[in-house]
Image (cartoon, rainbow, N blue to C red):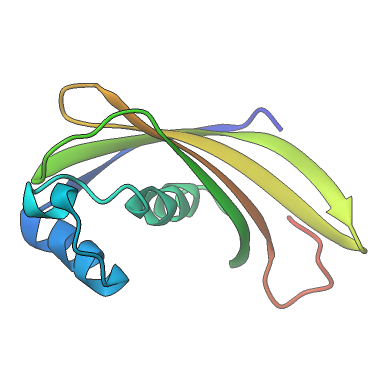
Length: 125
């Protein structure tokens, strides 16, 4: 716990943003107005954490808090910290918290995710 990672920047073109909305099967005014799809914060969190993760991990839980909206295209920055390590049913887990900001440095989303190591007895390296 306490390990910091990022910041990592990701370019999100309008076409990629619309693919997120389309894959979710959602027609929403936010999509019509070209606003970023908030659940993409989960994927951004996973990609940012993979920059320091020592082994393949299983994503076991996710919570996203939305703070603001922003248009696509945009450059999103993800910065995170390992907030907890714990054991449950003989497996080790790691919890991380990330903040996602846009190109104007507006805090869009907070993402809290839990992982365990894939294909092992559950020891997180």
